[in-house]
Image 1: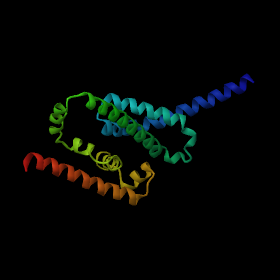
Image 2: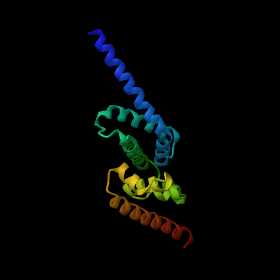
Image 3: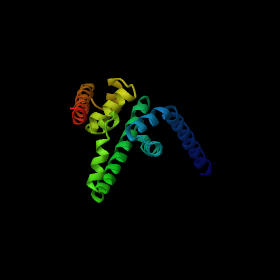
Image 4: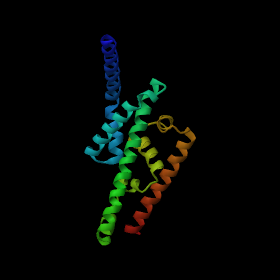
Length: 176
């Protein structure tokens, strides 16, 4: 009986080593994606750790080991979205407590591309980030998001339109 338990422990250790090797191969790419969503090193590292833990827990749900990278990327994006929702709830509470005039001054300074990108609908924003910040192809994005390529193309075009509209509006506010 003791021999069987020892064999099972060795199998789990080998599985764990293999899993973390696969994660290590994706680490730079995953961190880069997390950072492009969160724009904060500490939060990006924390979300990367959370995604790795979630993936380890759900590793048995991965049916095709060839799709490990898109599967892990999807988990990471979900973790990033969770963090953004948490931040948004926190920001709403802070706005409710703060002076509206101060918040208007801060929003007047939001002219750069990243701030305009924040105003794009989240599903479109994630396609824009993956396409233009991470240089992923439409088929890679479709695989990561588990959506048809046609849907990804539509979301990309709608996201670009929203981004152009946001930039145009900001330009008219300050220069028009």
